[in-house]
Image 1 (cartoon, rainbow, N blue to C red):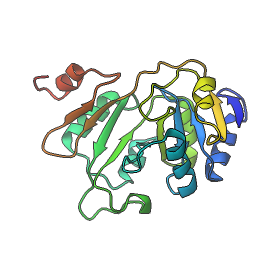
Image 2: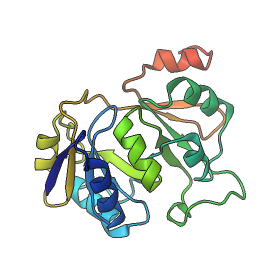
Image 3: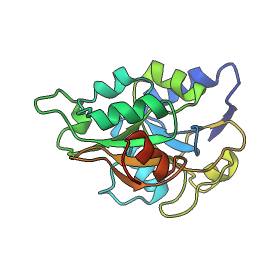
Length: 207
């Protein structure tokens, strides 16, 4: 397992190369450290499940660099999503989307009813995804356990399934807020860095 600092001159290139080679990379986000893999690298995706001991039926969330990348997933983008993304993307907001009828989606999303997506406010990660496209990224911890704010500690719990660590120092370790926008009304499924009251206020409804 290799470790590079986020500001090392070769960190971005090394992370991009590792992901394209089907490796698992521990990356900093604007909330917690995450395990990242390219969605179409099945072996790397499976190693994330193994590293976390994550139940197979729990799909991995997607991180994107732009609204354009999000829309390329074939998601239905309702008014609530437009309001929330305008206020908190890039940022600590994850939204669970349904898919547009007749939309074209990547093969790795075929058969899914929903996909959880966010655009993080983390410059290194945004630059990385501008090169690689969207990534599957989930918190760098064993399933059900807290995520360490330290890259060294987080990776130590997940060996031997991590190939490259990008260390950005101590992170906030507060997860994103998850809002499901697939349905008649947006529903908060996990409150994190953004409060339920703030989400309700943005949508102009009682909390």
